[in-house]
Image (cartoon, rainbow, N blue to C red):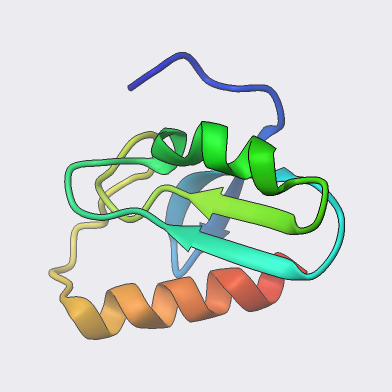
Length: 90
């Protein structure tokens, strides 16, 4: 993982601790990375959009600085986690 950018914070959702970064002001724009990546892939994009949006990028389970819980998970859990994370980030 790249060096942690400024503005990094941690949240726990369903017992999984994850890193996220919030920059900017305005309507919420929630960025979700693909497999084998983490929130740092959006550093440049987040900064570019921060003058018009509140940009939140987070690490999905088992990525970057997020933990991977002991229970198995699939797309439904990833969607549920991102939905809950997005609504709690406002």
